[in-house]
Amino acid sequence: MALNRDTAARMFGLEGRVAIVTGASSGLGATVAETLASLGARVAW
Picture 1 (spheres, rainbow, N blue to C red):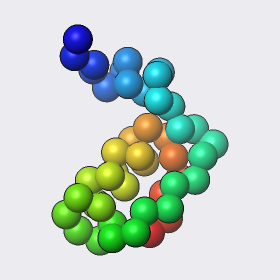
Picture 2 (picture 1 turned 180 degrees about the horizontal axis):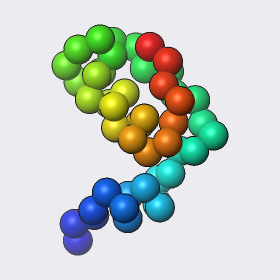
Picture 3 (picture 1 turned 60 degrees about the vertical axis):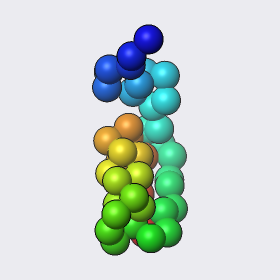
Picture 4 (picture 1 turned 90 degrees about the vertical axis):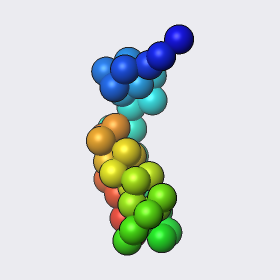
């Protein structure tokens, strides 16, 4: 079963949460930070 972005946002929404991502200046860390932000988290790196 594939999840689309809307389904993922409902299941894993992070509104009101803060995520701290180390190594977010490039590569995998940047992708993780962008994904967390797209799900509503405030991201610090």
